[in-house]
Amino acid sequence: MTLTIIGAGPGGYETAVAAAAKGIEVYIVSSGPVGGTCLNEGCIPTKALCRNAEVLEDLRNAGKFGVETGDFKFDIGGAMARKDEVVSQLRGGIEFLLKNKLIHLVYGKASFKDNHTVAVQAEDGSTSEISSDYIIIATGSQSAMLPIPGTDLEGVITSREILNIDHVPQRLCVIGAGVIGLEFASVFSSFGSEVTVLEYCKDVLPRFDTDMAKRLKQALGKRGINIETAAQVQAIEKTEEGLQVTFLKKDKECKVLADNVLMAVGRRPAVDTLNLADAGIEFTPKGIVTDANMRTSVPHIFAVGDVRGGMMLAHVASAEGERALNTMMAEASGIVPECPLKDGIDLDIIPSAVFTTPEVATVGMTEDTCKETGIKVKCLKSMYRANGKALAMDAPEGYCKIIAADEGSDFIPGQILGCHIMGAHASDIIQEITVLMNKKGTVDDIRKIVHPHPTLSEVILNAARQGL
Ligand code: FAD
Ligand code: NAD
Image: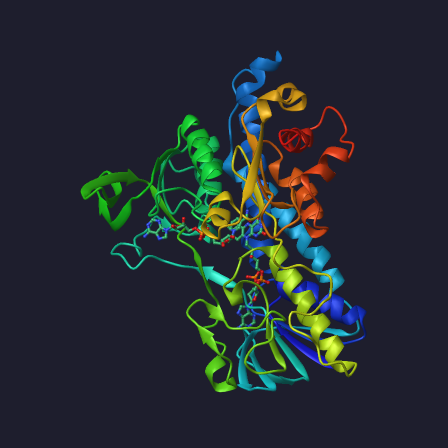
């Protein structure tokens, strides 16, 4: 069996390695460096900068711990150099993984010649063609821009440019209080920028638990980040005082001045040059249409990751790649795969985190979705300020909310349906809940599991105990 994968981000390269391990000959085509958005201009570089922000905040608070730091200076060049080193080390690791006799890595831009043949144009202009039994499209996504005047002005940037910026903007205006907007707002506030965030919806992180979104807005506000919600951005103009962003709030025209404007209003699937229509692959402006096994409208072509326009997360892209591969393997062994395939991967239980200070993490249903869908639930809460480790760390800000099925719902009473945490290391401790949700665990299971003391994981235990 032969497989062509277009794109070498987490959806592409992880699937290539897994396919080769199963004895499949793989061609993987990449127009950019291996690792894709996640490694080169997404998850990893942002988290490296988040760590810089954390170090700066620790230095500012060092006095509380009896540590005299004296004056200290922040050099963004040094932060960027460390970030580049981390990225380059990890990229080397992926290049090593792809050095496998069954994997052929081809650099160039791929497009469909027909539905079995992919044409590749290399940077030097040379072209080649690859034909294979199966094809996976994993081309990811690109920053979306608002259709307003001024987005092409110098100083208006996206996540790609801000990750390589050579200065700390004195005034940074972020358009969009989604995941990207808030992570950069948090980091650049720690770096010393005066940050204003403009969000169209009435809350930040519109798809997250409302309660948590409100608390996060408050926490970021306390750090000096100015967040304007229900703000309709109209235009960006160049003025003598800097870039002027005009927005409407409650029908009133308001203005913000900034040195840089970060556009963080979502991402759109990278399909423009693929020639999908000629290959008969169905797609919408949201992304490539697939079934639950990631199969497109052309049976031997699959699409995984951001290009599908679902949850744009690195771990989703790799899990979807695994599902596509499992489906092909089942088919190759003569089985007609059921949809969704029963391969043990539950793509409905996806944890995610936002690496602001404080962090937030979430998995499963929100209280609002349960209300909207008429599921009777109990919400069990605990506070970081009652947790010994959090106080010892000087991280008292935060809370945990577990959403559990109540008597009279279609679920097991007490079954965990979701969890939302704001606070230090929320991204790490959420995984306990993800594991339990995969096993249809209940809050009673959490109470019976011994948790080490003193740890932040006891925030979850304490929330579960509220239901006693
Ligand atoms: P990508 O990683 O985008 O890879 C697609 C690859 O395909 C690219 O290498 C591209 O060069 C290549 N390609 C595109 N078109 C073609 C073509 N025609 N021919 C050949 N190759 C092509 N997710 C998280 O889970 N956690 C995070 O903390 C996180 N942080 C993020 C921070 C930022 C600033 C951004 C922008 C994203 C972040 N994400 C995060 C999202 C994550 O990066 C994506 O969900 C993930 O990279 C998607 O993987 P993918 O394989 O679908 O596509
Ligand atoms: P997003 O969809 O999370 O947020 C975009 C925000 O912009 C929304 O809050 C939206 O209401 C707002 N918006 C849209 N139009 C607007 C307008 N005209 N004016 C003001 N606000 C407007 O998208 P994103 O933050 O660009 O991130 C893209 C994807 O990347 C996300 O799906 C996310 O999952 C992924 N990502 C994940 C992580 C992580 O896991 N930590 C980090 C960064 C990015």
